[in-house]
Length: 184
Image (tube, rainbow, N blue to C red; front, side, top):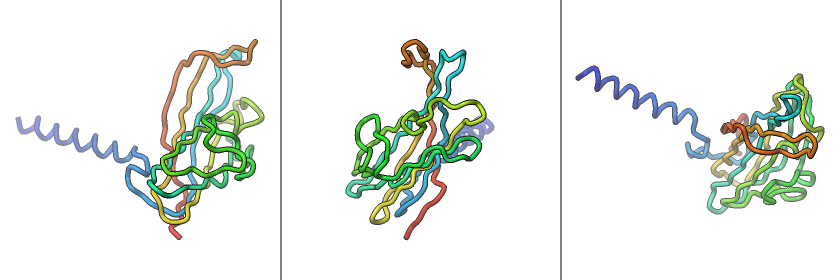
């Protein structure tokens, strides 16, 4: 009986610690005035071009009354070569039309949805240029909850004749990582 109780406590503690390790920064109530968030991603075709792998990037401002500005997005290929560099005037449009050219303001409670084909304009990448890294540079007028940024990698059947994605075959969700934080 004692061994069962000890095992139960160990499993419960392990679960709690693993959830905390995988939680997003905003779930940990971390604040900063600016920062850089790094995300992974891919954009390629396989199976003779009949399956497309791509990535969506979801940005969320969970603050109640402060706007967070996305002031730069940089995209690097697997070789470390800069293949996309966007400032506010050249931000690509988001899929949900919340951010785009001239508008990097993520207002309170707003979410933005970037898709990789708007960030990697050259199209699907060859194997020696993937995976990619995407860096989101953000700032706020004062210390705020850091933005929650995640990426979703998915694969879909792809119709070469129509150049259109079809039904989804797989999806994986990952939180991105803050690699630089400025409190001043």
